Amino acid sequence: MSYSRFAIYYVPSEGPLADFGAAWLGWDVARGREGRQLDLPGLRDITMTPRKYGFHGTLKPPFHLIDTRTVEDLEKAASDLAASLAPATCDCLELKTLGRFLALTPFGDTEALQRIAEACVRELDGFRAPALEPDLACHRAAGLSARQEALLVQWGYPYVMEEFRFHLTLSGDLPQAEIPAWVERAQRYLPDLPAPFVLDQIALCGEREDGRFEMLHRYTLAG
Image 1 (tube, one colour):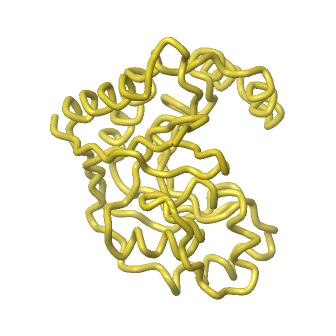
Image 2: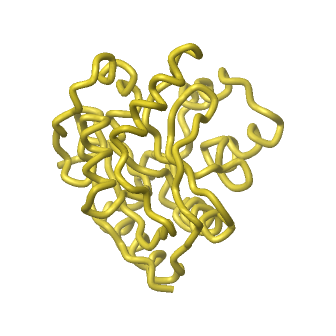
């Protein structure tokens, strides 16, 4: 199968959290197939934006592969990078509202997690084709700070390095008045969240012809 873009994600390993994510969003990124979405009125609508990506935490945002490198080159580099990185541990994951969308975010010291994300952005950037002008314009339309603009120009994405915040997205933007009800619904279906939360693997994912992402390989952090 050919892929239009690639990304480095954290994809939860098989278990209750991964099962919840697939059932909540309706797409199983680890298996590359539809998940049986929970029967909640309005859930399909509020998860329309994040569904194509699946339940994940972004480490290196989606990018087009530069034409001088191959997918096999990228796979080898991702494997080598994972072998050089130590796992990151923080206290737990918790359900939060980021702006107007729901996400699971880490609680506690996230310095080691930040280190992993920065390494993924920096060490694999040689595989990223220059960002296309429409993509740059789309990011700029959100209103960027001077630092975010500089990051966009350098790395093709404005929310990396010190602007990065790890999260596993559960919805698109919600009407302000509906946020408390959706928080309550998500809490009702969430499994026990990992405490501590350990990020001990990274996943290379690709965007398929239908626009949905699926996991190609998972690499254990062994540094």
